[in-house]
Image (cartoon, rainbow, N blue to C red; front, side, top):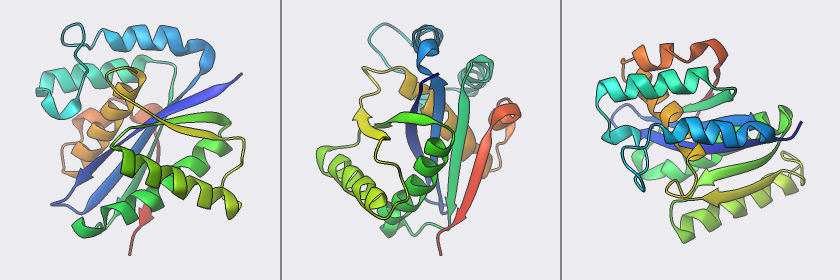
Length: 187
């Protein structure tokens, strides 16, 4: 069995919460899971994005996520100083990647942000490896959600968790049965 994971973030600036979410799955299931996720596509060529959806679409998306053969993992970091979001990302990324590597994941794809931020992520990963936090065999790269629908699952997971942090738990309740949630103090 070979595992891969897709990760995305959500930030609640008003609540001081940084969420980094990943969905891990067996590489053999990727095609079938990708096809199920494409059903959420609003129209061909358009990606699913949590923040653009109505509550009923969010419920449907959380229901799709809950029915798939995936391992959802979320790291919630707080409190987040809005001026120090990259620091929050580093701490959450370290925890998430360690957890995924421990679970047997050997390939992680983060949603791309921009070339400078992506390079910063990869430099941080090199630092984690040099400190012995991550195995060298764990591949970490970036992918575009318009090209990789499996990133939509991470977006749904991050969105549902973020909504729950804002006291709107109904979406996360749909997926809690298999959810691994880790909380870290960013003080």
